[in-house]
Length: 315
Ligand SMILES: [Zn+2]
Ligand SMILES: [Zn+2]
Ligand SMILES: [Zn+2]
Image (cartoon, rainbow, N blue to C red; front, side, top):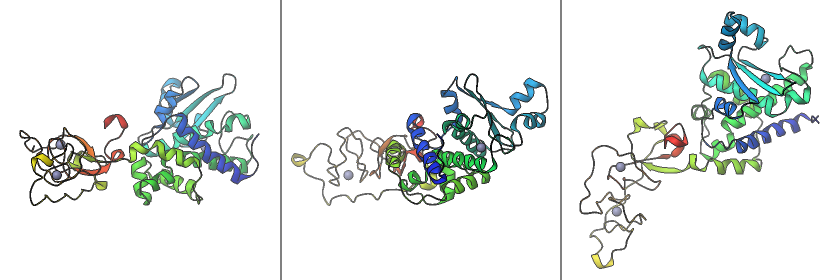
């Protein structure tokens, strides 16, 4: 039963986005809609207008005119007989990947929110005579709320201490002007934090975790977010041998909690007889309190895991 109240429907789209994040276990930005569509096979399929043009042996312009029905970016066709969704996307070089990402998630939104089945239509475009104009507008709004919330939930951003719209765009890969405007519109009405956001924020805990990474700034995805921890000053005299404890640096008294550390993460002192400082960063990941690398003794960069690499597997 479609809800009648627009605000309720908007809230439903918002909640569906968080359910979607859970269902597909999404926990890293940027989120890749194409990977999600491919996972959902065989019910959802994605193809480019360029693919279609070559199959039909027509120009891309003709393919766009025939299939996208006036939409420049993409459209979904729902085959009611076999409940298959085919998402056609314009992958022209003139369309940036971030705009493409937005369009793909918007189309997924239409499918996931049940727009095709609720309205018994095989495509959702402005010129579909089976969709009244105000209903079309509402469906578009819901798909945009969904896309904004999945790709760049403002609440998750706040939990990352990001309040600047351009930083959100950069981290979530929606920096294209079109995508950014759509995102701003979709999330403009957010005033309170709904309960299911808490669950989503927990899912992004690893992305959010602060680490002390032993790498040069140039090798990080978002170097501008990198800082350093202040080193702890060494004690006037090292702790005498019979009072030393495992995991406590006897040069500064810091509790580094790792009996196998070569160097103290707080003061950089060598903790093993044979430990020699390296000249190039070793790539080791230290905890977020580290000023120095416990493996090689180099200064480390304090940064969130998610800002170091494109995916969880890379780090
Ligand atoms: Zn749409
Ligand atoms: Zn120390
Ligand atoms: Zn290192």
